[in-house]
Every structure is written in C-alpha cells, then in structure tokens.
Image 1 (cartoon, rainbow, N blue to C red):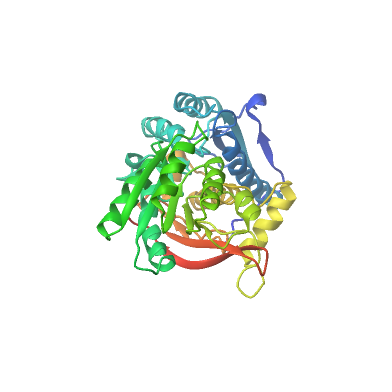
Image 2 (cartoon, one colour; image 1 turned 90 degrees about the horizontal axis):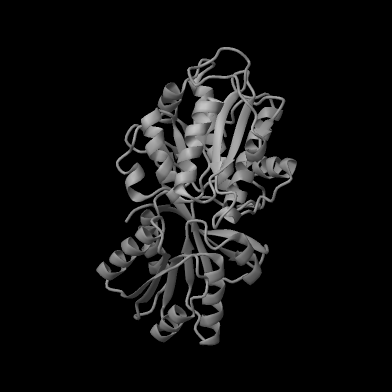
Length: 395
C-alpha cells in the first residue's frame, strides 16, 4: 500500500478555539503548515455520525504529522460546526477560505451541508471533499466538488444482486426502506424500480429520520410478509424493525446499505440474517486471520489517537484524510487550491483493506469508490466477515 510521507507534530484547531493561519491558498514553498478546513455537523441531528467521521480524519492527520508530514510541512486542520444545516456549512466554507486560507474543505457526513458548500466551492474555486452529496452535486462532475462514497442510488444494483443470492425460493416479496432525505430517498426510488423490473412484488416506504417511532410502517411491513427487507435507515428504526419482525415470527434477511446499521447494532444482535453493504470493511483480521497492512495501520492510528476503529464512519473519515493528503503530496510544495483540484483528479489511494476497493477520481468521475462488499456477523470469530466482494455500484 502506498502511504504518504508524514510529519512530527499535529496541530488540530477546535471550532471554539480557532487559530489564525498565515499560509495562503495561493501556495507556499516554506515549512508553513498545509491548511485544511473541516466543516462538520458537531451539533444537531447528524452529530453522532459526524463524531466518528471526524475521529477517523483526525487519526490519520495525527499519524501523518507524527511520521514526518507531507512535502516537508505539517498538516493543520481547522474544525468548524455547521450545526447540521446547509446555511451553516456554506458560511463555514467562506470563513475557512477567507480567514484560514485553506487549500481544501472536507467534513460533512450528510448531504445537505455538502450540497450547500458545493455552490460556494464552485464560486471560490476551492476543492470540497464530502462523504455524500445529493444526486445533482457530482453528477455530472463539478470541477471543485468531490465525494468519497457512491450515491445511495448506486447501492440499488448491489442490493438486487444480494437479493438474488439470499432469496432462493419462488416467492419474491421485497420491502425497500429509506429516509425522506435528499441523500437517502434516491436509494428507495432506484432500488424499488430495479426490484419491480426484476419481477418482485415490492413495498416501498420512506421514513422520517427525526421521528424514530415507525410503528405504523412496521405494521405494514409485517403484514406484507417479506422475503427480504432492504434499507438505508437509522439505527433506532432498525432496532424497531428487528423487534417487529421477531414478534411476527418473520425471519427474512435484512440488508442495509451505506454505513447502516452501525457496528453497535451489528455486534449487539450477532445475527446471520442482518447484512450490511458497505464501501469500507471492518477493522478486524481478515482472510487467513492476519490483518492486511492497511488495516494494521488503521488500527494502530486509531489506537494512538484514542478513538474506536469501529465507529460508524471512522473508516471513511480516515480514508477522506488519506485522499486529501495523497493529493497534497502530488500537488507539491507550492500547492494552490486550483492545483490541488487537478491533483485530486489524478489521485488513487489503495487503503489495503480499510475500504472495499481502491479509491480514485478522474476528470469526469468525482465519486472515489465504485465497488462494495457484503458483510455479515461471523459467529466463529465473533466479528463481521466479508460474505461477498466486488459488488459493482449501479442503479
């Protein structure tokens, strides 16, 4: 695995204690820090998910700085809270560019903050790297907007492929669940359309993330008697779903996508009927029992940072930092925001087991990850295992 060079000190700015920066996005050949911005949803409904993404990002930056940095310069990150809102994120982007002179901004775990910042990124010609975005934000590719995970709609084809594997009888009844958000709803639309085209009888429901009580929808689901349940929903809703299915003496496979359910839910239930389609793996030994090199580094870096490697989005935050640092290294000592954009479009990162596939961008594709893996609990190791590899994103 190719890993970037690393520096000896880590300077992380907390949102409430902003540190002024002297570097400029027009480039520097000095040993001044590489300035990056992180606008995250540290308060509000996305705070729990954002915490794990930030922890992964922070862990990689600390490891880079502890080992020598990039192009002879430490990496300095300014963190700002967008309060889980689009306007807050857009204001943060402007502040990070104007006051902190950042080369790029990353951070949002949800699509609404990303979509709002994307407009500013384009106007200011400063790269933005998000976890997820709305469908129109990166399709077609916008010059300064990059996203690590595939669009939720692109989990539709892998979901159908998995359904063909898990449902072998003549009955083909599928429940498709999502949230009502701009990120999640396209998964429902695309997956429902594919299942119907394939001859499945489907029940399609969109749930409100702000209302975890979904008892009315659960009654519909149990009455439908599904052969498979697929979804992109929050943990509280997953817990209710599993309870309702058990109470109704139903045991269909439940397949969730895009980081759901969390490892907390998966490890609690230890079920061989609860699956996750993800673009990142789990931080456990794989294959013959020996951890891949990238997984070993990930475990060591998260341990050194004092964070759990099993956070819901810790691995993707770590990977986002890998992508940005790799691009900065390619960009060189006189890197500017504009030349960093060009470097991102030629960046490929092999996380060696942390992600389900290599991540790369091109001039026409600004989604980094294309392949996915299907994971399920393995009672023999008391951990998650890869049940099916190389699922191709598509809708």
